[in-house]
Image 1: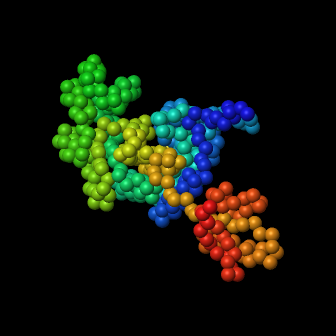
Image 2: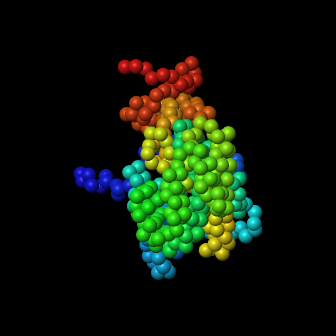
Image 3: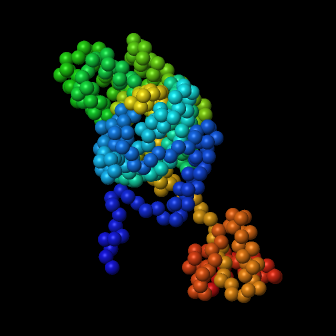
Length: 398
């Protein structure tokens, strides 16, 4: 037999029964929780026109690198397999709902990515997320972030580390400087690495005013606990837009400390994750045992502009399949073995007993042949006919 047929593409995994059941249980709990907050479930197509998949978030270039493409045999147009559902959900909001009322959507489904982002990532994650459209206030950001933290609590994560930032701080400084797109991207990459020496060198080479060089260099060091927010207000006292962003972060800090006191908060004002499409507050969740980000989100206003209906929006997403691997597995439901019965006088009573037990929530597996036994069918209890009734019994030791 050739073992090559057992191999899977890199970054693609099979889900075995115990984990599949764990995922399904969490899926139901999480979606029910979202529904209790008024979020409506939507389902987006797995395959879509490539132009639609790469628009709506401002991150078309990033998505283009991870989106698998095929040619539509009917139209001849280029199709893509969704790598992210956010653009499609934005289209739903823009196309089907044209009033100004806030809209809340949630979703779950497999997406496909052409490359891996990190060691633990899958190329086919089970993406769970939600989007809140139509409100640009900090109240929406608090609601969305609360739902993310609640989701992680449902999955079983307790010791969380939450990073927060605000993209408009960097955007405001870049606009005041009048940087070209190339310069802005160069500086963005250096800020991501916190390469202080390189940032200082490139700012000097551009011959920028000294006060702006000082501000950018200060931005690199504005990371840590909530005290950095006070420092930032002093440093950027002359920039109203930046002060509003810091105010939002302070409001969020007070909210999280009051309602989620066990979560460790970390602020990084030069954090630019998702810079090409986020417009405001951004956040990423981590767990102590893993160095990787397990969930992320933030604000991306005017997301539906390319669909003809610009709306403020905020949301998050995470890979439920990955998080079930990182969290503790739920205890598998106990399985009860039911024997094969050939006696016609017992068949009817056994049939009724099996139905009753399954309605009560038991997992009952019936033998199909005389060769089957409780151990081979993964059962820890057996069903026996005792005192004229079927009873659940312990397996007799050999």
